[in-house]
Length: 205
Ligand code: GTP
Ligand code: MG
Image (tube, rainbow, N blue to C red; front, side):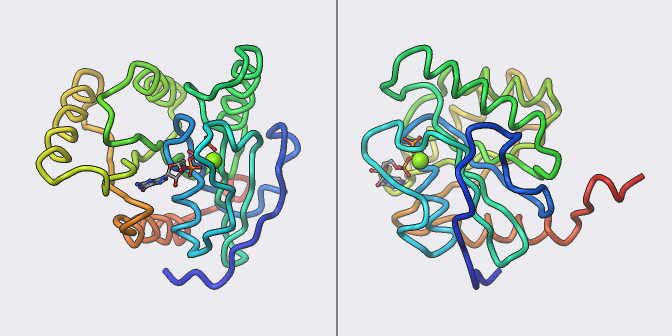
């Protein structure tokens, strides 16, 4: 898919303040510093669109970007490791869960996981929650440029093992890197496919 246009629309403190749910939408979620904003910039070929920082916790609101005038990307705050007080962390988590449960045009949530780390309990619990809520998700492993091929494969095997304890079939995943651009075409291909079959909820009945 060719990205002709990518523009920041707004930052919202709640799903109730999000832009009209006119277009199919894809959310990027994952621990703080996992590379959500970087991946959004990679997909849109715009290094300045989503704000990137080496300090975890840079993204604090629900940030909507409109792509090609026809679909939304949403950059969400990180959960987990951000160095912010517990009450703020709780507030972000509530905001994210409310958004995921209530945003009716949300087609798929991309759950980002840093491939360098072993499976982490928080991430697994969050995937369980998506499963219980029957929210479609797709896993994107990030920062693959930081690992050699063997380590990459053994880490992927560890994830498959962890997933297999809870999931059958295993959740779908892609391996990405904002530095080498790995996975970019594949992710855009998925979105293109989903956009083509998207039907707004209120037209379905
Ligand atoms: P929060 O907004 O704090 O939740 O972080 P985030 O998930 O949006 O991460 P962000 O994109 O800001 O990236 C965090 C750090 O990781 C930055 O220093 C990036 O340059 C770096 N980074 C992101 N993606 C990659 C990648 O694919 N490879 C490498 N080597 N570094 C990356
Ligand atoms: Mg961010």
